[in-house]
Image 1: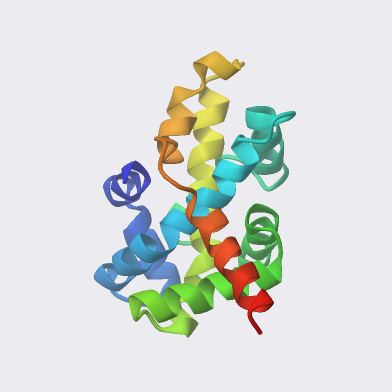
Image 2 (image 1 turned 60 degrees about the vertical axis):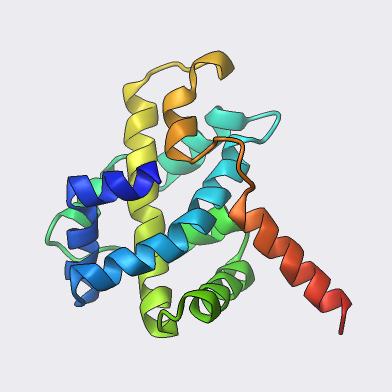
Length: 175
């Protein structure tokens, strides 16, 4: 996964570990478990037929764009409430975010408290990288967005967030 490699190479995993007070290998495991769903949320915004990249760029700009990554890479405390607001926008609400944490905990064995603390910070870090990339590419047409698409894992694979929401909906219907 390109985004995970980017996080490792740029020091993002180490920065998240510092903010969370846990060892980098634990954060790497958490990132591996959460990233498919986080990227799925960003992909949904990117794939919107009307706004697409412009809509994604607007959301990222509203929350600070590339400055979110800079903030998380710095030793200063991260703005977790802003991370939760962005998470709610990207994933579709707090109930979805909580379901993501519960699902990832059940399927990965990662502890719920660590996943819950990491989720908004990881969304901000990914959003910051995407925002910096979008800003550096200037005006991007739908034919010239491969850099962002590649970071989002837009390679024809299923969207992990969409799949999780489908499971949640089918589970509710079965009760």
